[in-house]
Length: 115
Image (cartoon, rainbow, N blue to C red; front, side, top):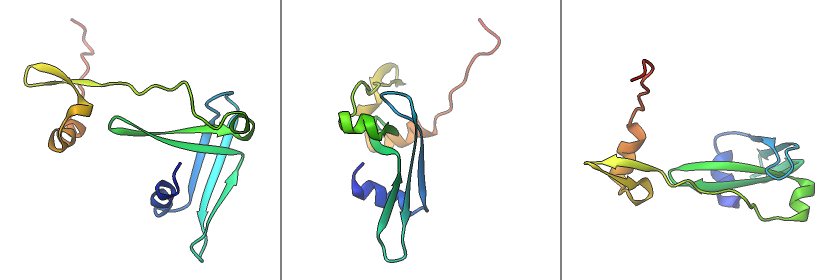
């Protein structure tokens, strides 16, 4: 995670990133705290990766031993999402700013009664 991203996240308050290691599955917890002098204190047993995937941002964690072995986050894949636009399918990554905002407001309906 870039320091600029962490600063934006921590402006909302102390951040706790908790979950399983992406590589081995062990429990990982990383905390970031902003001190009164403006310094950021990071503590925990791993590393945090912030990845933008399409319109969403996802966080991945690695434990210290996996990070030491390989600092690169591997084996994750961005999913290309298609949606219907005026009669045809188009990847949402190709949407303009207005259409992306409209896409976020859409509601998904599921047919629970069957066909």
